[in-house]
Amino acid sequence: MKKILLIFGVLSLLIFIRPALGLNTAQTNQVSTTTVQQTDEDTEESFIVNAIDGIKQFYNFTGFANATPGHLIMIIIGIIFIYLGIKFDYEPLLLVPIGAGIIIGNIPFVAGLQTGIYESGSVLNFLYFGVVKGIYPPLIFLGIGAMTDFSSLIANPKLMLLGAAAQIGVFITFIGALYLGFNLQESAAIGIIGGADGPTAIFIASKLANGVNILEDGTVVKNLIGPIAIAAYSYMALVPVIQPPLMRLLTSKKERKIRMKPPRAVSQKEKMIFPIVALILTTFISPSALPLLGMLFFGNLLKESGRTERLAETARTKLIDIVTILLGVTVGASTQADIFITKDSMLIFALGAFSFAIATMGGLLFAKFMNLFLKGDDKINPLIGAAGVSAVPDSARVAHIEGLKSDPHNYLLMHAMAPNVAGVIGSAIAAGILLSFLG
Image 1 (cartoon, rainbow, N blue to C red):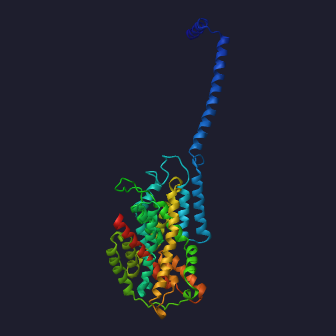
Image 2 (image 1 turned 60 degrees about the horizontal axis):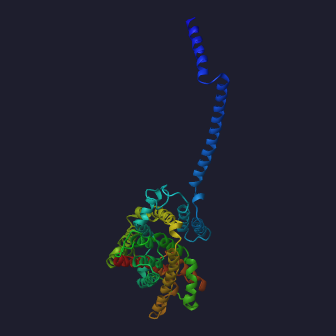
Image 3 (image 1 turned 90 degrees about the vertical axis):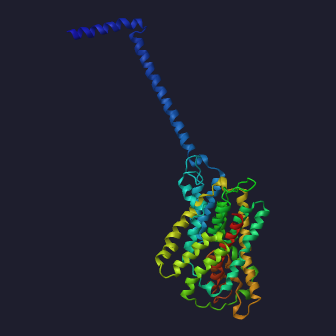
């Protein structure tokens, strides 16, 4: 009973208080209904606004919102690289990773997301460290040494002169780059493209044209690693396109038919001694090239020693494959549109084509010059002079194919490998000389 009276008293009190508050039952119900409706409308409007804002924010973070014509151009170039590598077999082990890297490096993103190769702390930036610090090129040279047979060069040492002659492209391009307004360090890095040796070009660019070095007048050297690397590897891949016309232009059919005597047999002892002697001689001449030449001849010693076959096998297969993948992808990714599509890049590509042509012509003409002093079977087929550029083994293969077109029974491959591997050594020495003066 007391509880009932208490409840009744509270209700009575509320009835008497409500008029004092200016509210009757009808008004209370009306206000309550209006408030609920207003709240529902506000909630619905807020949800729509938030949804639109969320969609806008999502769009702003996508590549569609941040894409520029430059990004699209570079993505198309990356696709072309992949197409050339797969369709025409132009250095697919290089062009496919580089092409994929170009696409990766030109996917638009919002600054500060730590995604791009130049964003400090990003995964790509850590992988790019091996390019910037010149770590990958010596590892590539280790693998090249472990897969190279120097027998043809040992059997006919005078062919080393053809590899040296082809390096004229390096120094002429160096002068041309200076004329076009590049400074000494940048010109030296660009000149190495003439050697048609991608790892060497990357190595010297990482030392001289890395965007970090400062000249005496306070000028910061430009970062040209990406354009130089892409140019060097592009012309390496285009050896079968660029060299044959020059070969036919500078040699007669009679000269292309010259048959060279078979090289002498080289003993295993000579093969083991060669990398040691060559290492000492070349690095004494050009100490700055030690990281490249040291690894090249070390790799060859692993191959020829007969006791370290496991190490040689790893160097020429798994190791070089892994490094090639990392090098190709990171070099490709470094070609971000805002950095790569510049006047300097276009000039570098033009100079690269010029230097490669000059290097090829230098080897061809020097072979013809040597023939003035040689007689009979000692004469050299000038075609192998074009193999003096260090695009191993493509330039040697192209010389061989061109020889077969003039004489189907004239086999020049083994002869062409001598200047070809000499070109690898020569380009590294040239890079070391430039580093000695400008590094």
